[in-house]
Image (cartoon, rainbow, N blue to C red; front, side):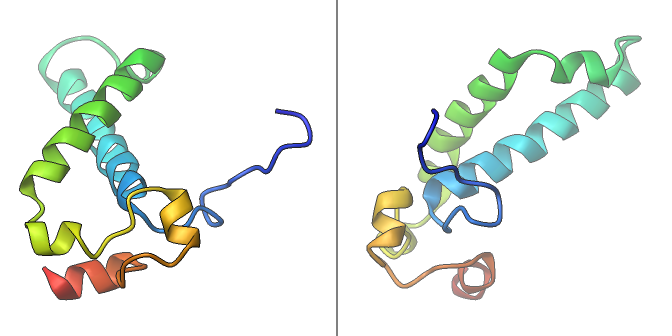
Length: 100
Protein backbone atom coordinates (compact mmCIF):
# COMPACT_ATOMS: atom_id res chain seq x y z
CA UNK A 1 0.00 0.00 0.00
CA UNK A 2 1.59 3.30 -1.01
CA UNK A 3 2.48 5.48 1.93
CA UNK A 4 1.65 2.71 4.39
CA UNK A 5 3.94 1.37 7.05
CA UNK A 6 5.99 -1.55 5.78
CA UNK A 7 7.15 -4.33 8.02
CA UNK A 8 10.27 -6.24 7.17
CA UNK A 9 11.48 -9.37 8.96
CA UNK A 10 13.80 -7.59 11.37
CA UNK A 11 11.25 -4.87 12.15
CA UNK A 12 8.38 -7.26 12.75
CA UNK A 13 7.84 -7.51 16.51
CA UNK A 14 7.86 -10.91 18.20
CA UNK A 15 4.36 -12.31 18.51
CA UNK A 16 2.41 -15.52 18.08
CA UNK A 17 1.79 -14.87 14.38
CA UNK A 18 5.54 -14.49 13.80
CA UNK A 19 6.07 -17.91 15.40
CA UNK A 20 3.44 -19.40 13.07
CA UNK A 21 5.05 -17.85 10.00
CA UNK A 22 8.44 -19.22 11.05
CA UNK A 23 7.10 -22.71 11.69
CA UNK A 24 5.11 -22.56 8.43
CA UNK A 25 8.23 -21.59 6.48
CA UNK A 26 10.20 -24.39 8.11
CA UNK A 27 7.49 -26.92 7.23
CA UNK A 28 7.35 -25.61 3.67
CA UNK A 29 11.10 -26.14 3.20
CA UNK A 30 10.94 -29.54 4.92
CA UNK A 31 7.97 -30.59 2.79
CA UNK A 32 9.65 -29.41 -0.40
CA UNK A 33 12.84 -31.30 0.35
CA UNK A 34 10.90 -34.42 1.29
CA UNK A 35 8.86 -34.16 -1.89
CA UNK A 36 12.01 -33.85 -3.99
CA UNK A 37 13.59 -36.92 -2.38
CA UNK A 38 10.49 -39.12 -2.57
CA UNK A 39 9.24 -38.13 -6.02
CA UNK A 40 10.76 -36.63 -9.12
CA UNK A 41 9.14 -33.23 -8.49
CA UNK A 42 11.63 -30.46 -7.87
CA UNK A 43 11.23 -28.63 -4.57
CA UNK A 44 11.39 -25.22 -6.23
CA UNK A 45 8.13 -26.06 -7.99
CA UNK A 46 6.64 -26.69 -4.55
CA UNK A 47 7.59 -23.15 -3.49
CA UNK A 48 5.85 -21.61 -6.48
CA UNK A 49 2.44 -22.36 -5.00
CA UNK A 50 1.57 -19.33 -2.87
CA UNK A 51 -1.54 -21.09 -1.64
CA UNK A 52 0.68 -23.79 -0.14
CA UNK A 53 2.44 -21.19 1.97
CA UNK A 54 -0.85 -19.69 3.08
CA UNK A 55 -2.30 -23.10 3.87
CA UNK A 56 0.74 -24.10 5.94
CA UNK A 57 0.61 -20.82 7.86
CA UNK A 58 -3.05 -21.35 8.70
CA UNK A 59 -2.40 -24.96 9.74
CA UNK A 60 0.55 -23.83 11.86
CA UNK A 61 -1.60 -21.23 13.61
CA UNK A 62 -3.95 -23.98 14.71
CA UNK A 63 -1.31 -26.62 15.55
CA UNK A 64 1.12 -24.33 17.36
CA UNK A 65 -1.73 -22.83 19.39
CA UNK A 66 -2.87 -26.32 20.44
CA UNK A 67 0.60 -27.45 21.51
CA UNK A 68 1.60 -24.34 23.45
CA UNK A 69 0.66 -24.67 27.12
CA UNK A 70 -2.00 -22.18 28.29
CA UNK A 71 0.39 -20.37 30.64
CA UNK A 72 2.75 -19.75 27.71
CA UNK A 73 -0.06 -18.56 25.42
CA UNK A 74 -1.08 -15.98 28.01
CA UNK A 75 2.45 -14.50 28.06
CA UNK A 76 2.95 -14.13 24.26
CA UNK A 77 1.45 -11.19 22.35
CA UNK A 78 -0.89 -12.51 19.64
CA UNK A 79 -0.30 -10.01 16.87
CA UNK A 80 1.70 -6.90 16.00
CA UNK A 81 -0.75 -4.58 17.73
CA UNK A 82 -0.40 -6.40 21.06
CA UNK A 83 3.38 -6.63 20.66
CA UNK A 84 3.68 -2.88 20.12
CA UNK A 85 1.51 -2.34 23.21
CA UNK A 86 4.02 -4.55 25.12
CA UNK A 87 1.36 -7.08 26.14
CA UNK A 88 2.90 -10.17 27.67
CA UNK A 89 6.45 -10.62 28.85
CA UNK A 90 7.88 -12.86 26.12
CA UNK A 91 9.37 -10.73 23.37
CA UNK A 92 11.94 -13.02 21.70
CA UNK A 93 12.58 -16.62 20.71
CA UNK A 94 15.25 -16.81 23.41
CA UNK A 95 12.76 -15.91 26.14
CA UNK A 96 10.27 -18.41 24.71
CA UNK A 97 12.82 -21.24 24.74
CA UNK A 98 13.80 -20.43 28.33
CA UNK A 99 10.16 -20.69 29.33
CA UNK A 100 9.58 -24.00 27.54
